[in-house]
Length: 400
Image (cartoon, rainbow, N blue to C red; front, side):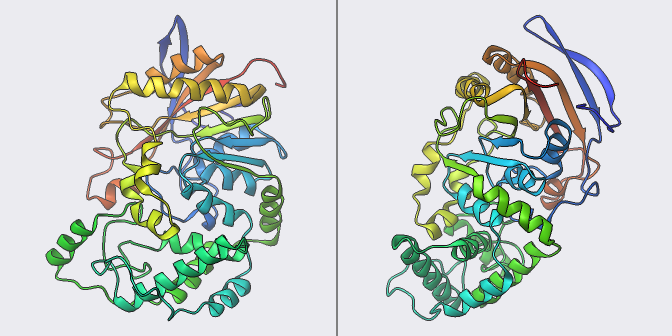
């Protein structure tokens, strides 16, 4: 079932606590295999492709089953599960995660988005504002401040609806990037925001000044891209999933609102040691949405040693085991850490076994092309994330 239709090669097994775990490698999925919905096309640091959760959802669940991600990030697992007729649960320490996934589960019509954008008083900006002149043209910043104030007022009054949520989500993802499709001047790829000082250095090096970007027009343009190809049947599946979605914000080690034994499959990718500084990367998004980036960052696992990382992950495994139904599955993606010098699967398997899972296999999806590596000018298969490494666990009992 797990390897149905996959072309893989068996590698030497992994030894863990006296157990021999089979290891399989191959191109399990590619970007061309069942092209993912364009709804996934929002930028977020350290996110996996939609084909990864799709692989496990299709093989290990049936329509109506609940799929969970305790480190949901941009919501790839949740959105893919919804598009495939599964029920959705997602959690993340950062409140930005809910901003990113919830609006796409209840995508409003393009007409509704355009009408709402036409109702916003774009020229009404606060009298005082932070100095973001290194990122934005003054007129672009004025429009951003007007939109930020509008959304904050709607939220404060309890008036924010699906259309507002969608506009907030798109704006959050257009704040900074490296093309004219973003509100900012040229900067790093949109999955991270540099500091004002670093942006000033980029501007000096490139001899650039922020040009005017029409905030309203760019939000509408990105909305059209995200919803292109979205068929009525997909909208119906999304709405159905949205009505019963469980979206929580908090530590993954304790999610009391998620009922014991309610999850058929968990597909997740946790923070990897101290590889990514989520608070630093998301400071601009936090500012726009009224959050304290430093406070959020303190709640995100940033372990400098494998032992510290294991200690942080052990209660997470116990909680996932609690919510997993008998016979349910966990696909735990561990990526490549520190240029492949750290094989996290060797440290993940004991955690899963200690929590009560059986380890079914380690799957290594080897990709022929790595977009992230090429962005940074790194040759494929030399540096960057060139493979997905997934440890697959199962809880005893239940259906086969």
